[in-house]
Amino acid sequence: MIQYPTLHKPATIGVTAPSSGVPEALHPLLKGADKQLQKNGYQLVFGETAWTQHKAKSAPADLRAKDFHSIVQNNNVDLIIPPWGGELLIETLEHLNFERIPPKWILGYSDTSLLLLAITLTKGIATAHGTNLVDLRGESVDATTAMWEEVLLTKAGESVTQHSSALYQKEWDFENPTPHIFDLTEKTEWKTVSGKPETLKGRLLGGCVDVIRHLIGTPYGDVAAFRKTHIPDEPILWFFENCEMSTTDLRRSLMQMKLGGWFENCSGILFGRSDANHEIDGYDAEDVYQDLSNELQVPIVYDVDCGHVPPQITFINGAYAEVEVQNGKGKVVQYFR
Image 1 (cartoon, rainbow, N blue to C red):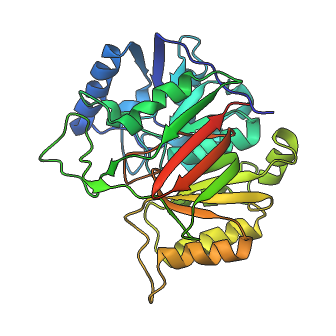
Image 2 (image 1 turned 30 degrees about the vertical axis):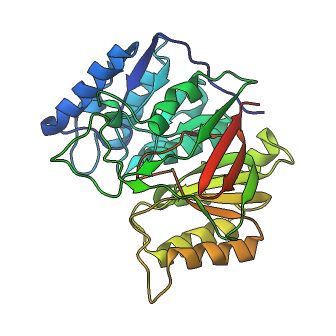
């Protein structure tokens, strides 16, 4: 059984940085997000780590864990959104007391996805893979990103529907900011390995492959125990995105997941768009997807709205999902059951 956090508005957002914080020169990003979210009915409470950054982390691991607990256990805080991802969140895991993490929504992606997946796998608490805080500082929010709020306001027993974006951002143009932060210029097209329409169903789990792969073989990445305890006899529908890996590194990581049993009773895989996926000796991302599809005998969808090439859909770790892909368009229905 999955625990779904409950959110009501008005609400208070807790901001803590279990990975990277925000250096002083970029503090206006946090202040901008604070200002815009207040206009939308939220109050923000900032932990100390949100404002600091040194040597690829917001603070030493034990202090990051302490700050996270001070925010997540604060009865006045309704949900948690880190400023952004980073590099070394994995250092904090051994300092966290997972038994003291209550069922509150935690939203983010990139390095944050490692914490999200660890919480869902160890506790059976649903977590939200989607936008980070600083990308909510715009005067407006694009339709795809904006769904984070409707998704998190969904109650246990209900469902929520999202659709693929119309356009995505190919690259950042910091000198010409838009009202909604992203520069959406390229036509979105969800693709299938089969080249045919696909329908995928299962319990969602996933995140950034670069970091979640390091949970394999640890107490925080026991997918078999999660399946047995929380979703017996139900298939898993994985969603992944690649931040920085070459295609061969991605392939090695996926093979490690396979050998580690992560793909047992897998019903399909969704891969987000990536500006990494650098091909090696002609071996490109589509080859990776084809090889995996052949081995697992499951449908694979790629170039979905997930990860470091925005905008992105809000995927809920632990939710039951039905994903339909046809003519380059995608529909995601998540059931909080």
